[in-house]
Structure formats: C-alpha cells, structure tokens
Length: 111
Length: 108
Image (cartoon, rainbow over all chains, first blue to last red; front, top):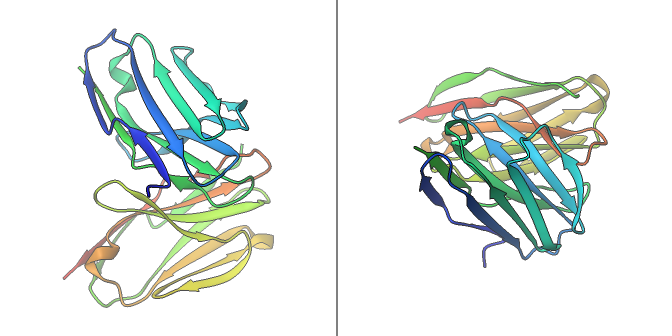
C-alpha cells in the first residue's frame, strides 16, 4: 500500500488552463503539506493543513487553492496556469512534529 | 525564517569511498530530517534526528543541536547512493525548511 499517493504523476497543459492534483495518505497523520520543487531542485513549502485547518500559507499566488475535505486528503487546484508554475509538486504528511513522508510527486509542465 | 546551509553542493566519489555531508542551521530546531532524492525523483526519509546519533546500515547521522549542525555519513558508497541529499529543519513553524541539497554522484 502506498503511504502517500498523489495523482496524476504527470500533467502537460497550456497556459491559462486550470488543473488539480489530488493527494491521499493512509498513515493516520494529522498534518499534510504541499511542497514545490523548482528546476534547481529547491524544495519550498506552499501550504500546510492540520486536521483540515490551514496553518501555513506561504507567499503563494491566490491562483493556487488547497482544499482538505478530511485529514487524509489534501488537494491542490491551480487556476490560470502560467509558464512559471512548471515544477514538481510534492504532497507530504506527518505527525506534528514528526517524520515527513512524501508522495511520488506530480510533474507539471505548462506550455 | 530559519536558514539551512548544506555542504558541499556537489560531490563525486568512487564506489567504496566514504563521505560526510554537513548541514548548518541558523536557529534552534525541534525537528531535523535527512532525505535522499534518487535519480527518479523519489524523496526518501533517511533519518529523523533533531539531536543525537543514529545509524541505519551504511548510513549514520549526528545532530549537535547546541552547535546548530548535523552530519550525514555515508560509508562504502555504492552507485545506488547517487542522488541529492537534503537536510530539512523545523523551528516551531510546523513545516520543514529545506537546504539546497548535496548532489552526490558515485562512480563505479
């Protein structure tokens, strides 16, 4: 069983489109995250949810909207995609504080 | 926010060699982890080590929290150790801040 799973693994889309990435964890963790990894491999926190409540919202454009329907799921919706949004998006989960476990990543390419 | 510096940025080893990767951080932490990102992009949790020393096979890690650094030791390196090693810390912010990584290449 995959502990943190995210779909899709690859997205290729045109500028201006809207896309969503879904994430689910079966570890029973209370905190979930979205991280963005750029082309230089730098990993940066975007959002963090604890028991469905938003606790971290970094300086991310409001075109990015996370949604947590329950503590096992954290989805990411992106409106009006731009070229600079191309990156790998990682979902992760943990207890708080505790070990962080990542999903396999979703590679977004905006053309 | 907290700063995390990793060194060296790049490292090339021959198979069988040993290496030490360093992580310096700018504030006290309640969480420190080491990760390995393999060539396929997967991020694997190596150690959860806010203080002390741990060992797992050929890998070991030591964190000296009072001096704000952590070390990752790789012994008898193998080609499968190649990839990027990240140190990440948390300082009461409830999310890990990552260093820029050490890119390791182990040559046969």
